[in-house]
Image 1 (cartoon, rainbow, N blue to C red):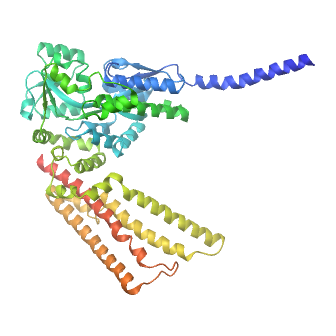
Image 2: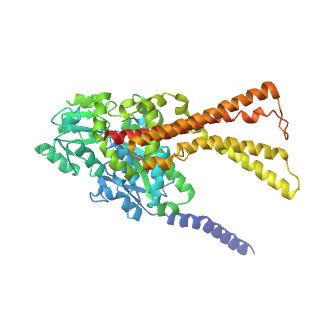
Image 3: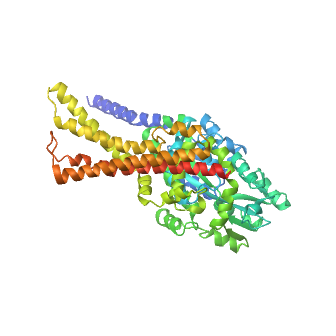
Length: 540
């Protein structure tokens, strides 16, 4: 009996052990031994340091279940950097930490970051990446079999050469410059009169030494590690475009990961992205990034002041004035006619509104007097930033739907109805209609004038915009005046109450005038964007 009990105990222990061990083995077996990660640069670059941070965080947080191996210097691509997205999409490569420049052949929306002189600051870049623009790009990536995880960056790209301190478009003419092979880069430098050539960095260094190539363009995070002062004397900080970096994974693989692993991967990418961005911005945004690195990541920069560092190495560092930047912006405007349709006008319009609201006139081409005036109206800017109209519509619509649902249930299940629900629903509907009109204006629905707008020449289109916007604003202003008068009469003369709830009638009227603010904001957004588009067309 004792022996039988011992056997039974051993059997139970064995079964329990198997129950505990088998799922663990099965789960571990679902993961690959190694996940290949494509990255253009080496681990000594800020970009590479961000990749290492991501790899370390993932390994630590998954207890070694997910092991990522970075393949530096585009080893997996054999020099074909612009094919990264295709190979990750096909599953040949598992994931990448890649520049938007290199995914742009597949994700054309990513070219928005390469429009010359379009993005003017780190703040505006962050607004785009973490706003509607970033969401649209991630959505486009998903349609191509890629899952975007988080943003990092390579930085604003500056130009260096060994001939002249560049201050005007005329200074660029005739220079032979090594540039990225992306078509929009080639177009930009040809538009400025330069002779752009695409070659790998090793060949470029040889060409610099032989005097065959005069200069190149790259962010500070590249200029310092490659010791650009060995080849060039002049560097111009012109921030002509920015080079974001994105973590992305093969979608089929990603969908197979359990939710907890997906969460770890995404959060690790986000944290590594914050770290890497701070590396690239250190010394270029005051103390902000330097303090972030020190306090959050316990990291001290080896080169905390890159501009001063390059000057100490003998380089002549030039920063463009606002007027000088305007000249470059004017010189590259014709490119917008070619590239905006390829990128997508819907994707351009929202950052353009941010652009108009940023208060940075020197960076915003083609300002009209109307737009200059509108940009000074701060409450319109506030509405644009926090999108309070969307929140109010959502809350009111939810309330209206909930009340209507309760009324339907009470009427058909319990055979009675609340008279007050109909009264409240009708008034909520009126308020939603007013705010919804503002959203319609924002999307170009100006009293059916959209059809006319498309038929006429740019000069007459301006008249259509101003006429329809002005007429709409006047009509809603008249509605507001009428409602304010009605409220005044109800309060001072009639003091009537509603039939169902017995509350003062003027309470229902009072929502219309303040909600009309959203209508004026919608008119402002749509008309200002369209006017700027027309101004740019006239300048070309």
